[in-house]
Length: 473
Ligand SMILES: [Zn+2]
Ligand SMILES: [Zn+2]
Image 1: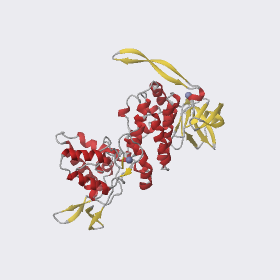
Image 2 (image 1 turned 90 degrees about the horizontal axis):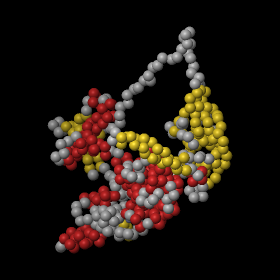
Image 3 (image 1 turned 90 degrees about the vertical axis):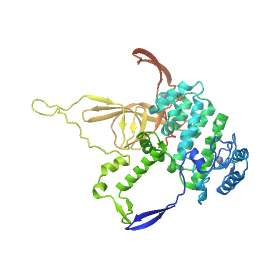
Image 4 (image 1 turned 180 degrees about the vertical axis):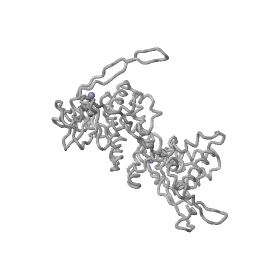
């Protein structure tokens, strides 16, 4: 594509090229002139029919162009539709096929739509349909509090990042809640695949492993997204680590489009949103020092200094908030009658500590200090003295079922707060410790009426902890 531009004081022509598209499955199909995931021949990258999972004959641009010609030559509508159904190719206009770019090969499988919102969501909906649902929900809340106690009930309205958090604790949640063995195995394989993907490692074997494990769970998981996993290894070979092409970054700029959606009279939504978007981009171009052509004088012009130095406006435009300086509140110190400062000697306890990396270590979570692993219980502060209560690790082992390391803990001890600590992601080994699930009642208001609700809660008896090897980042 050739775009007229201005650089270094003279008019230039900018030639832009592109190597890839980042798209979800619907857009990928659209760019490939493919009918979409609901079609009988559902994959835009190869020729497979519904019910099959293994990769079929590769599609390429030449063949697609050929098929489109055949569709155009069909005399009847029924003949045209039949050819479309058999081949999975659409006959309508597609200018991308005129470029020297093969859309079948150059749109990598997206992690957000295929892994997080795809196979993970599908597996989780199978898990939430059996009689272990309430226990599963309980352990999800216990292992990853931010997912809340209604995670399984509202799968449809969850975001990619929620499923990302779920994958990293999924094998533990499945194991502790007593899900069937085939489902537990699938969560284990999925967590392993996800970790390798996030590290940009080779994914051919883990992807194949998950596909086999998912097929053992049942044919309900044999979906187009499961098939798409099998294309991932080749996509990664061709385009580099797929995590770098994650759709998250692109989808987060949807907010700018959304902003435009609501500030209008809704009479011509598409046109008005596009116009608002165009104006925003033009404004951004101008404020970052970009040039615009001045047709009257046949020259190029730039915004004045007072605009270019308005950093606050630019930050708002880019979506970053302007940080306001805050000052700590001043309070009067306690002094005795002679005016001498009274040092408070009261002992206070606290339930978490922060590392220099910004991680929070809570009760029963492990950390490394000076090369030794310890488990945090609570912190004690008395005046200037800071001590923490910890548990020593007396021995290590490997869990046979989960394949992760485990620590066996000793008795409680006290030590002065060490410097330079690093968090290790650990979880209570509920299956080995024999942690029980108990009920407790709490009162809540339902339409002005006080009602008692029974809740489930895990009572931990932590003496063994697992290292969460599936923590990705
Ligand atoms: Zn395929
Ligand atoms: Zn436990």
